Image (cartoon, rainbow, N blue to C red; front, side):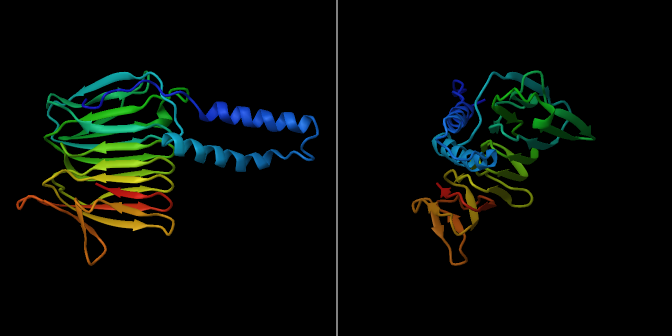
Length: 264
């Protein structure tokens, strides 16, 4: 895969939470706190989660993963569903067409596969992996066949480079983590959607791609669009500049409530 694997990140959320919780309990034992209510720690938990997200982009530490690969065979189309939960996901293209999918996944786990005629249906599910495994999921797909991609996470962040893939349609969503998407050169079906409740949304359009962006942001969100790459249209959408005259149109819908939107 094109992405270079980084060294594991140091777990931060749990140690900080334990330190703070221990401090509160210690203060209560010495009567520095008149009345201790464990429910009040819920507000402290949200504060710590927000701090970690600001510092690291998500809440999840990394760990060791195991490589996997599935031969393509006679498959001519793919349908991939990723339910990542608290795991970070990186999506890219394979350098050749020999395999259907390959990458790094949870220890002793691999995507489930069901072939329906010439279509492969794959599922990567956090619920089917060990709760003690926090390795990032790195997935690369065959580049010369149409794909339907659905990727969701609760705490994890999503980084999807679709520029080298044939996309039928794709959707990405995260609760706390950020979502980064590189637009594809061509879109065969419904518009691509990316959304996040608290995380930021990043969309990158390569030079020459004919990308139209529709942004639906909450009152607390801001849109940061590079003026050298996008024109703000009268209908409120953003149109990528320097598109090739024969480039097919690609529509991307971005939704966020509290996060910011970055177009570059």
